[in-house]
Image (tube, rainbow, N blue to C red):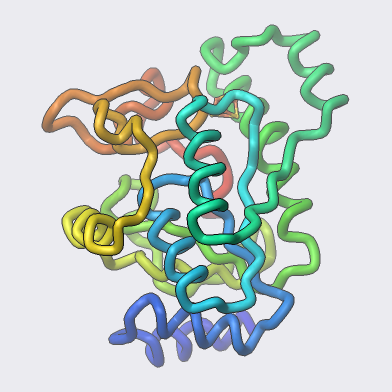
Length: 234
Ligand code: SF4
C-alpha cells in the first residue's frame, strides 16, 4: 500500500474531502478510523462522516486533563448527529506511576516530561484505538503550524504504520469557518474566547489577536517542538 500513496495523491488531487472520505470508507470497510479532538477541523470531518453515513469508526482521546467545554461539545455532537464517538482513556497504572515519580504538572518542567505525559495520555491510547485499522483519518490542515506545512492529503504514517488521510489539508481557516457556519456545526465555546487550537487545559491558553493559531499550545516551547507526537514525522 505504501507505494501507492503517490498515485492516490495524484488521483485525489482535485477532489473534495467528501469524495476522499467516501472512497476510503468504501475500500477499507471496518478498517478505517477517524481520531477527533473535537477541534474545529475535526468537527467538519465528523459532520461529513455523519451526513454521508459512511462506515467509519470515530474516536477521541480523553487525556483526563481536557476542558469542560470539550466534554460538553463531545456530548452535544453525539446527540446532534446520533453518532457514537468512542472515548479512549490512558492506562491508569501508567498515569499513576508518572504522577508519582514526576509530579502532577510535570509537563512544565522539561520537554522530555511534556512528551512523556503526551505519550502516556495520548500516544498509548491512540495506538489501542488504531489497532486493527488500516486507515487513519485526521483533521490536519497545512496552515495550522510549521510542523504541518508539508503534510499531504494522503500519507504513510511510519510511526503508526497506517495510511493517514487528511481530507482538509488544503483548506484555509476562512473556508473552514464558512463551512462550519453554513452547516450549523457545533464548535467548542472556547473558540470565541480566543482559543483557536484547543488541547489539554494545562497546556492550552488563549492567544492575542494576530498571534499564530498554535501560539497558545505548549506556549513555553519552540514552535518546532509543538506536537504531542500524534503527527510526528520520523
Ligand atoms: Fe499531558 Fe499537556 Fe500532553 Fe495533555 S497536552 S497529554 S496535559 S503534556
